Image 1 (tube, one colour):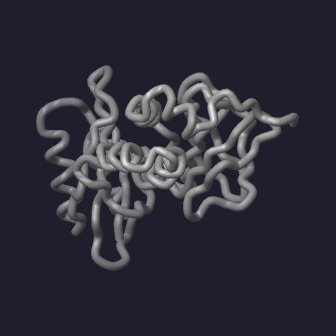
Image 2 (cartoon, rainbow, N blue to C red):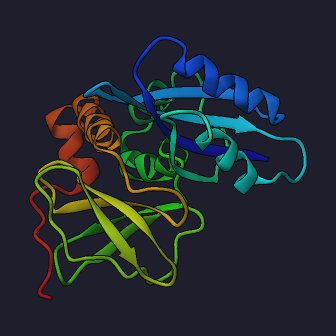
Length: 222
């Protein structure tokens, strides 16, 4: 079983080693570690860990938080561990099949951001669903957003959770990424989502991006 943990800890020598020691003592193998933030003497790191069989997640969280200055901000099930350069894999797929650029980004987002599903929609209040990933609800309850940059939101659909929304070029398209467990999307994750979309469109070039996203096609009436 794979889990993702977001941990806030003192940004000083030995703190990270202590956390990894505690994870190891609990029988968890650390598969991946990502630094989200280092600010004001503290760091926020995310760990993807593998456990054999069923484990006491609450017990692990309690053990970590007994260590001085450590706070677990979230612990949730993870689908899989991305490769060593997952963004490059996605960009390679976009370059090889430009016509499926939006579908490729939407399909990849849940794995890249340890989320449950993603969709791309066109328009504001009268949104048209353009593409949806596996496990996306048929009629997701999404906020009417046309963001200029990636932003987070509280998801209050068929199951509550946290979401991120990002514009896909100048195309009236918005990509939503939602996870039902775990903490809100960190600003580092939002920045990363925006960069992935921007670089993917850059790979396509101006004409390719316009064709892939339907830029210039205004949404119909709400």
